[in-house]
Structure formats: structure tokens, C-alpha cells
Figure (cartoon, rainbow over the protein chains, first blue to last red):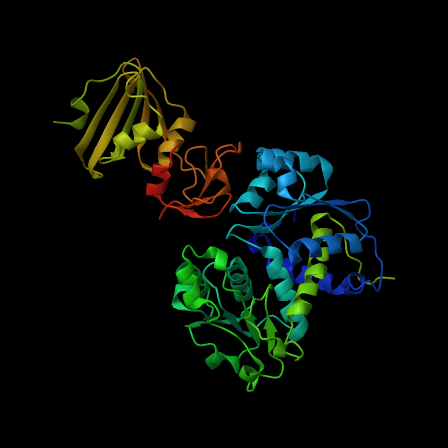
Length: 310
Length: 155
């Protein structure tokens, strides 16, 4: 694998292999072992849009493996503010770094960059397009908690229309035989072409606006934030803001092993009284971003992850 | 009257036959022909055809279209036949080939695609996923492009 632009760049076998490698890297991510597999390698973090978890977890991943990181920094202080094209910036980065992580407001920016340079490009979000490393860490979280990816009942909740995370995750889960339930207000429902693609590939899909009716059968409840910035009209946003708020009393009949996930940041979708339960996995999920990205960085840089650290 | 007699034979140039009826003006646009300054062009439209019912025919004098130019036309007229004419005779027969990828023929139609930034210098690339039915996607953002939007966004 040279670049990771969408999850379609990975076969199921490659996904499983990355998750296996990520699992082996857990002691390194926790700081319990030091394995400088990427010593001497330089990562360029190019975030043209705000990011907290993705940028920091890539940085943590690289540094835990002995590599170093350059950040593009605030756009106001860079050549971007002077009108430099993405193409020119990428040519420069091609000479400075061994691998680049890119988040950009324009869709297709990651593929465009990958075509423009020789170093591997990892897509960390391109507009409303793809965010494959979020999907990898989501799959890692699900497999870590349930011991498998296949045959699970996964309920995705909230903004299913604009959320790139839920689009990628639905496609990825469908490849592993999950049953999917989409919970959203009608105005934020999963795009029809995605539902149709999933059904064509034989996935059992249920769509509903009522979350409570699906909690007790779920193995995974994946909450998402209603993204205010996506609404052209604030009145439209207010109609659906806060529509789904998961609280402890909602989980009374939930399976013991059911997990609650969220890509974060949350703004009220999950009440804090759930945080201390065994169901809450969203902070663990954020940590798993480090191991998933460690495995990915090793893969694109052609570095083998040892079977056993010693 | 045969449709080929509606316009005179040409001495040298290119004849494109079996164009879907009504599409010849669009093909001229796709070829980037400047109608005010180009070589002589004869065009017949909506003439009877045994194969197609009705068809268009174009004759471009004193210009042999290259295979690259012809392939630009393949999304509109995949079954058109092309004759290169020299000294009133058919010197060469060519087919339009719908390539897997169209480079710098049209811009992606999606408003937020990276290629919508006019300063970005990389080529516009539209991938042809299937020919029948015609399915095209931007090579960068992955958005589907229908024939109308490709025509609207011709470069």
C-alpha cells in the first residue's frame, strides 16, 4: 500500500492485517515498550481544517515509534495564506518528509496530492469525502470489544447525511457482514445511494427515526454529532439539534456487551452518566486512534511490525 | 437520396459517420472547433440510417483528426465510424475508443472538488467506470459525472 485515500484502497485481508499489527503495538502506544521502528522517518501533518484527535494521534503514533513530526501550523502564518497552491505545497513537502497526512476542505484533495508526489499520502478527511483512518480505529475498537467484526448489530445515530465517518464505516462494516440500523431525522438520513449500495451488496439495513426501539438489540451504538456548520440555515439546525441524547436510563435493557462509540467531539449526544459504565468506549476509541495510525504509518513506510517485541 | 450525396465528397480530411442524430454540433464543440476560423466543415443532421434510424454525419476538410482527438468524442458517439480521406479515397478507417480515463476533456461538476480551484495545475481526470450504461467519476473526488454535466463542464 502506498497511499490511503479511501477504505476501498484496502482489501479485507489488509484491514485485518493492520488491526492485528495495531494490536501488537498496544504496549508501545501505552508507553510500556519502546520500539523505534520509524526512527529517522519524518511525518508532515498538513491540516488545512481544524483537528484535535486526528492530528495529535498521528503525532503520538509517529513519536512513539521514534519518528519525528512537522506540522503545517496555522494557515495564517504559512505560504497557503499567500496563495500557494496545494500542488506547490505538496512538492515542497515531498522533499521534506517521508509521509504526509492531509486534511483539506476540498473533496479529492488527498487523491490529487497522492498523484502529485512520490511520498505516501494518508487522507485525514477531504471535505465531506473520506476519513479512512477514523474507520480503521472504529473497526479496531469494535473488534477489541467484541472479539470480531462479523455478524454484529450496529446502530448508527445522528447526522448520517453529512457525516463522512458514518459513510466510510457503513461500507467497511458491510464488508464484514454487519447488520446496520440507521437512526436519524428524515432531513439527515443516510444518502439513498449509500443505502442502495449496501442493500445491493446483501447487507440488512433498517432505517428509523426512533433510537430507543433499537437499543436492546444493538451490539454497537455509534453516536454522532449533528454538525451545525453543515446547515445553511440556523432554523433548520435548531429543528434537529439535540434530537438524540443517550442517557443511562435508556440503556436499562441493553446487552451487557453493547458498546457506545462516538468519533468525538460530543456536544450533548451522550450524557456523562454513561461515561463510567462498561458500555462507554468513546475515550478508548480515541486512544485506539494512536495504535491504528501506528500500524498504518509502518505499512505505508514499508516497515514490518514484529510479531513479538522484545 | 443517399445522405452522403447531401454534401459533396471531400478531397482530403476526415469523415465521421453514424453520429447519433442531433449530436454533431456537440461533437464540434468537443473537438474545440472554432466555427469562425476552422477548415471547411460540412454537417448533415437527422438523415435516415438503416442502422440507427436517423444519424448525423460530419466532414472536416483538409484536417486529419488524430486518434486522441477522436477519442474525445467517444462518450457522445461510441459507435461512430471514421474515415480518413486522401485524394477522394478512404485511406484509413478508424474507430472511436472510449478510454478508461478522460484527461483534460472536462472539469468535475462537483462544486467542492479540488479541481474547482483554477490555480491548481494538475490535469482534470474523469474515469470511465463503465461504457454501457455510461458511468463516469472524477478521479480525485470520486463524484459521479453524468453526460450532461461532462458536456456542461467541457474544457
